[in-house]
Length: 416
Image (cartoon, rainbow, N blue to C red; front, side):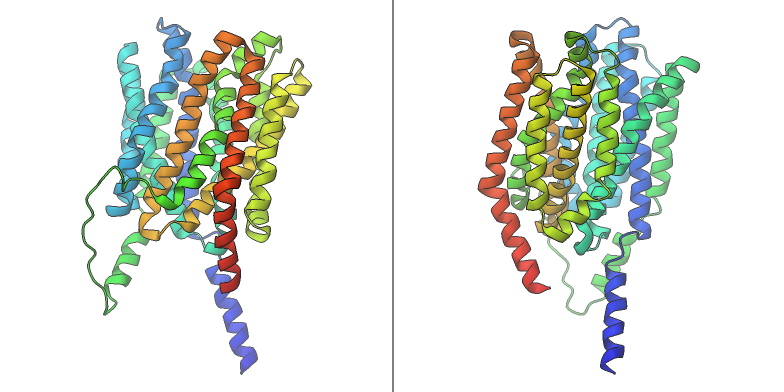
């Protein structure tokens, strides 16, 4: 009898630990659609703006207004995700994003394009805030790091596929085909989100409980828009992501400055290594602990950024790309998963918004600071400065986040 009970418990545990459930797979597909769409537009819009007569600084604003709009809307979306639900925010975000994509096709005014691009940032902010929260909801706690890591694969695949698809469409059919394709991808994601029903089922089950009490409505406040448990991880992420924001923005210019042709290989290698890391980093973090993954990741980011400061050949550039890819493959999903793990379920939207606000801010501010430093002192000094900022992120991690991770994992070990 005892053997039968034990076997039943094992089977039940395997069901609870199932990673590839239907909701998770659906969210992966939606993320793939929107991420490919986003990468297509990131590649094509700067070129389109220049074709319309805008200079390189205006082309750079295409990314700037998108990032700023996304950052500003994070707190609001985090609150809406927690109070109104994940599905409704996903529908709002994807709808705004998709309509804006087709809207670009209807104008040749650079000012209007920048306004529409800002609206896209608003839409993408809603999608990414709610999407990450859905993933945290439907994943088993024991495999959260692994699941968040695989979720990031959609963005990695999109980074590798989206720009090539955009350039192919531009060369064969023109810019209009890119915007129409992006719109179609957004609509496909929207239709799939309409089938999401796990929130409704969970609410019905909760309301059926005899002790259920309807929760009081919570008013939105700026203070309540950010989740306290996510602050330490987000602070570290803010500084650690800055080198990536700078490198992604200025890599083509850096290649010209140091005489390296075909600098696009940097992005290809980076995407491949990031993609490969998703298959083992999450498992390592779940098995050995988050600190054992994050610390080597930070060291690699520091080393990869420092290598760029002294890079003069393609070989050095690709080594740096691989090292940085693996470093970010270690820290990004692991910090994100830990934040989801420690945040209260009813505050996951705010926690996700806090994390992504730091991520957006690090990328955007890193690009702006880097541009000013390069203009004044050159690329070598800029990369050395960003390696130093990685050190700031490491110091914040050691002072705050490492202790928080140790406490949480020690409690989980005792429970298990």
